Amino acid sequence: MADETTTTPAIPPEAAAAKEQPAAPKLKMRKPKQRACDEKDAKGKLCAGHLKRWYDYPREIEQLVGKGAEIYRCEFCKVLYRPDPKQQPNSYTIRY
Image 1: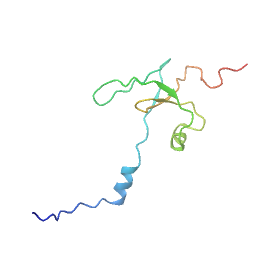
Image 2: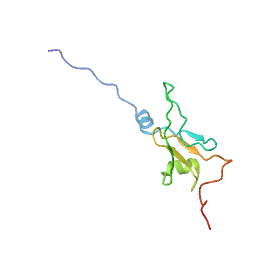
Image 3: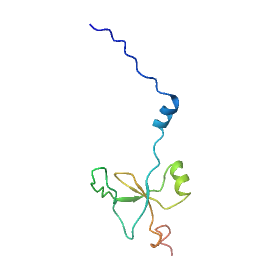
Image 4: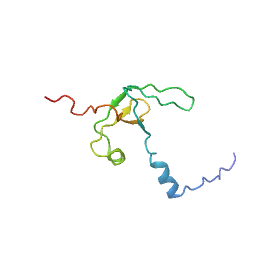
């Protein structure tokens, strides 16, 4: 049997911390009346996931988009979408 004396290189703590932090989410603007995601993957395939209103987002997203902002998220690729500025907001639309 061969002697196994290989050593693994030590990862500096700065590099390990950088790997643990997730990248900032991609933020896009919705097109007028857009309901499906138009993001393409590395192969060029269209995601086409449903854009769902995201009410209870974490603090990191709140710092990015603002407190109480209307934000939508793709159900598959998790890309964030801001509402169309030309379209009336969906918050408080049914008031009497």
